Image (cartoon, helix red, strand yellow):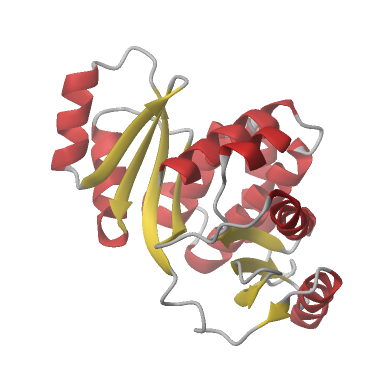
Length: 246
């Protein structure tokens, strides 16, 4: 988990400084839109929307953008989205799991297959990677003025499996079934996470030489650049050498 958390920290910094911030906003807007179409525009009655709004605030998305996304989801004549997943292997046997939200599934399938082929990977069948990843709740929480001991006790009682403090942020990991209870505990404590997501965490990682690993990272970045792809998970070992090269 420590390598995963370190890479998350690097990505958070990169995202904060990056011109790609609009990409992050685009993915959050899509999540808000889907949440509204699924269960309505009232955050109090729609946990998925409430979570999407919390993540939008954590990414410093302006309020008007959030409201515009909610209005877009409420529009009955607006585009309908399909949620789908893709699984495959990159060069070197690295497993890649993709979560997508698209208004054109054939376009997304075609693009995903093209990306895999371009980097000598293979698109597999759904379910083929189920043994490689565990679904976990991952919460990123600014340290701020939180009392460390008191906060840790609260998180353990709410179902935290692991906690790490790095560069001013706590990363709290829960089992999937404890994701909801953890959200409720944080709300009760009036603690607003910067992000709260169900992620797919690899049980084991695959280590490659630096050049091979960098090629896999280029494939991962290509997936992340695609507007239809909401999340990319992989089991490439993020060595210090690789992270330094990024």
